Image (cartoon, rainbow, N blue to C red; front, side, top):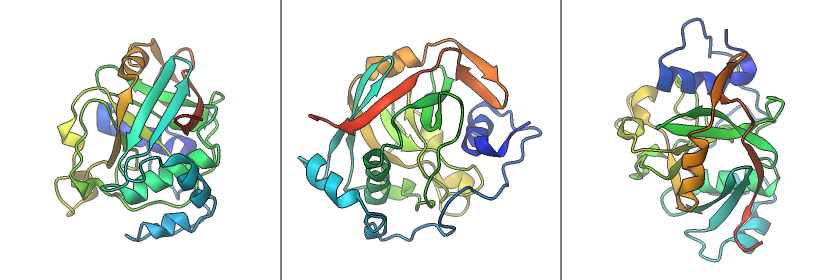
Amino acid sequence: MCEPKARFFSVFVGLFLAATAGCDTSETPNRSVTASIESDPAAVVDRGGLEGVRTATLQDPNFPTIQLVTSEGVVVVELDMEKAPITAKNFLWYMNNGHYDGTIFHQVIPDYMVLGGGYTESYVEKPTQFWIRNEAYNGLKNLRGTIAMARRLEDADSSTSQFFFNLIDNPHLDHKSRQSAEQYGYCVFGRVVEGIEVLDRIGRVSITDKDSFKSTPQQPVVIKQVTPTGT
């Protein structure tokens, strides 16, 4: 049985494990603004608080680097503001507001991906803002070491805060067509430049099923803090 709080989790179970039998992922999203944003990247900036982090973070305004300090080590990610401006700014907004601090990687599929950015160690979903436009058409591929946005399986433009790292090349997650959500793909918005061994280590942790959470680490893998590099 799938609880509403696990809606993105349910999507990934369906996508990666083909185990959605009995799961209803059609519930209304828990968001403060009901409409997804349009294609204008500036719409993300208008939420407030982003300009400060852009000034402090972007040594290279097109390819800023951020670090995820996890319980397994540090991962440094280079974001692609050129090809995924909406998605990268959205991630920076959540980072700037401390959303990711204290969250966990709540799903780990060995030799596939690790998913996080939405739940606390108590498996409580953190509040999110509105859905963003899916930029999976940007030409970036779901290759090993890339970071991409999670979303609902049935709605292409439904990403909020949750993201995943590709542990291997996953070409079936790439954009193929705008004709359906299934073919639209998952938006890559950056790549790991340091700490890929940390992600590999996370990908090998012992996993279990916990209530509606499938393939979750037996011992929480915590994202302690996400900050600009050099801070």
